[in-house]
Image: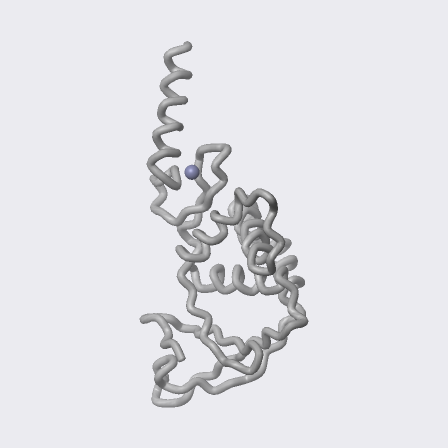
Length: 175
Ligand SMILES: [Zn+2]
């Protein structure tokens, strides 16, 4: 089983088809997958694609609304069907505080879970672990890609930045 990341306070564990696994989450990877799904033509209807499209919706809403009560209400409704069972965590998974086993919960990902529910679960884990604090959307209007970056970062890529600068200059030149 995978170890928790350094400094991680919570381990997210799920069981799928009899296997227990730790959800290892790198926000960068999820964002990359979400971005990749944006311009799928024809629209990919695989379960995985639906999950990423749903995560995209949650991220967009989060950037617009923030973690308001309404937002969390909707997120909680989407999470409502996920069942958990209690599980004591071994010390190789997460350091034991005061030498005692830590409490954990296993999310039951069985076949009855909809991709929408998996997406809400993934998004909520990113949100609660603070991984979306640097989330932003590329400022080139037609790009729509998400990125993680410092406040001054505006574009997802050099090409989006270059295109925005060219446009700005053209606008100034035409004044
Ligand atoms: Zn971009």
